[in-house]
Image 1: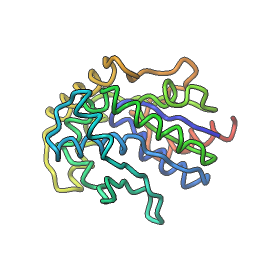
Image 2 (image 1 turned 135 degrees about the vertical axis):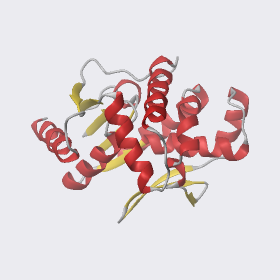
Image 3 (image 1 turned 180 degrees about the vertical axis):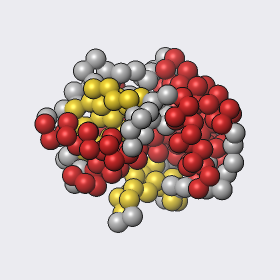
Length: 217
């Protein structure tokens, strides 16, 4: 069974998907981490975002998702970058990098291969529309910009990073626009996806509802 969970930044996809996978024994695949790892490679190499330069970078870049007892780890050319890819500089550039067709095609091929392992729960922006359009169950999570900004601020605070609420709201709105308006695999709800507004829900409530939907399916 393949379960696709899509939605904008901060809607609760990754946290919810990870907990669901742990509870019901599915393999969790965080596709956003893959794009973040490529973005980190772009930043480290000061690579211009053009087809030729990105094709060269992708050819010499390896992104792996490693399942461990403590959860999924993201490896970039063998280096564990799981924490580094969540830093603000990567967040600020990931939408632009992931909008490139060379990057997107390479990651989608890898994501489809990862989907062959069995019962898989995969989250991202285009899982139900582009990566697995025939997924057994499609969920589309949404939440207000303000709710998502508050969640992101809490995450950054844990890492000792400060930002203002106004700046975070503006950043999330900018990412929404970039993700929704890109030419290749834009963020959108699949026609057969079930939409869940997480603005007023706890993580536990989100997890319980989606598990109910999975078991019903």
